[in-house]
Length: 309
Ligand code: AMP
Ligand code: MG
Image 1 (cartoon, protein in one colour):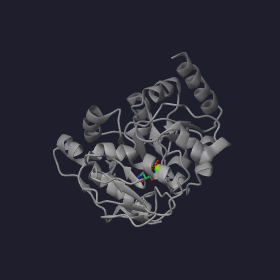
Image 2: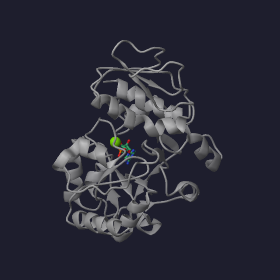
Image 3: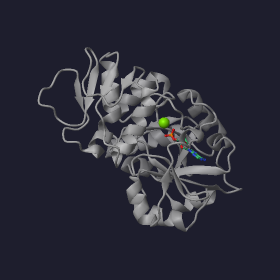
């Protein structure tokens, strides 16, 4: 507890000085900076090697602070009540007098916002008088980190401080819903669409055809840097084989995301497993077919992008 307090203090010290640090969230670890500061947010893009046109998600702990930056509406209120804090990001209209740095939005009039659930990060946000812009703490287009160790893997000593919050419970990025015009899902993730539909009481679409047209929804992403073969029935010699259901015979190149087709559990293990396989120096990966429903849809989306290596 005492340690946590001093780590929160340290985090605030660096953030107040316009440095970026890594923070834990329930989805993945983020590379965080003062969202109101041009200097701090520029460092995020530089460290991640992120194209400037990819806008950042801003993390809040209080509605009061959010309302200073964004216009909210009834649909937002409904979803907020049900899913926040949690793995759901909203795209909202940016207020004219908002203090959000232009780097964050790439000059757009909209802002992506989220309320993370991780306790230690909520405590940190409470102590700050600005929200945190925080994309995933990995080099752009690579695998997202789900633990402190993963962040070290990505950045080594280039990062000033990592706030340790243990493993990310969800292990996959947030779902993004745009509430700008007609509500629509821009990215699949930690909140299942079916749950969002239940609250909104109307059909909300995720159009996979459109997904490349949004900033940051690039074709290649989450890549372990080696070829991935999807819907594989068997692994070839020397291939790592990712499975979601226990097989009768196992081999040392088998990596289970789940042993009983539990897709939520599989999602949580996805990035961890890809990173492990890469470390073990396999040259390619085969993955068995993942059912395209619930979290399976989000897993398949990531795998498809990761396979466009
Ligand atoms: P991440 O890279 O996980 O931080 O996710 C950021 C993603 O959020 C971006 O790549 C976009 O897809 C999405 N996003 C952020 N801001 C906006 C925005 N203003 N409008 C639409 N999508 C956005
Ligand atoms: Mg990312």
